[in-house]
Length: 421
Image (cartoon, rainbow, N blue to C red; front, side, top):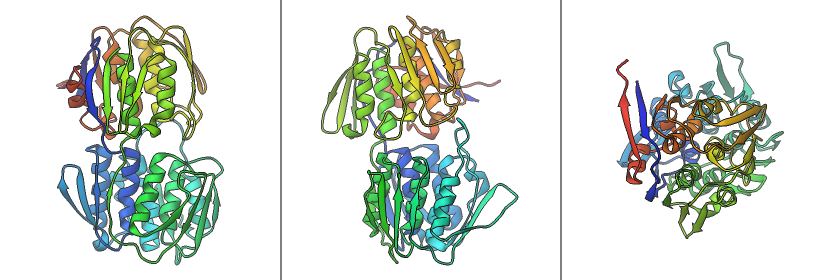
């Protein structure tokens, strides 16, 4: 069993380059299926979710070839199957994007229920509602598989009862080649929604309104090949910003879109960190102790739920009281038990957590409960007194490229070790 070993108490210093966005690439790679020609996708991060997605594409029959470590060419013309491999689908949540992509490609899809991180029930009823509105039918299954079929997808109006990134993406994929106009109301507005829309447009799709709560898609009969570069990862950038602030460091976070980071920047500034924005970088410095604050996670442009565990570490060591109210998921505070074992004072009541800042955290052995909770454990290890060991690092590597090397270049004492036991 591999794990991370971190010696805490070292302020991070230097520069870090942010990789392509996980949440964008796992939507854009399935979208290649809609093309009638090969596509080249650039700025792809080296993370396990990308590896899994590319394996799914190959299993479906697509030809996949790396041009360089961060560029891949995909030829979807050889796709012969509409069934996603069960073992692969269970490794990641975003495998459900193949439902919308395959419906748009072939008119049918057979996809196992997705896996990935668990922090509360995440039904896909809104996805199914959208597919039904476009004319697809569900075929009942007994083996935890979603099967959809449509003779011809037809554009329609779809109102999402709650803002859902996943449902917005899936409906966009299915609608891109449907006949007529699809209107998605109460759509998600995250940067990766806009990135997917821009990729579809590059292929020749007619998509308007991405980034607002109403997206209009007029289906087209054909989509051409395209060359496209994935946007920088907003959450990876925010994580390194939080690391710099937590350790009292001075870090230049490069290859970012500062506008995507505004909600994170605002809270770090409120807590006492000094943020300097540049064209494609932000510098984060912190001297002295951080201050507690109140945070509520919300859909974009609010504070992202995927930054909630990371900011919780900062509140654990900040002066005074701070609170986090989770406005997206039902059960995303499981990781607080690990922080409490390190000396944090946290009280969780439903979707609200109250933090009484302590002077320091004490190193111990902890587990990564999920992807972002794992990133929080890394931050906790960086600030704790002593040596912290983090288990279940497979979650962390679903979304953070070369995290060990990036941290080492910032001066951290961190290594991957193998527990022979």
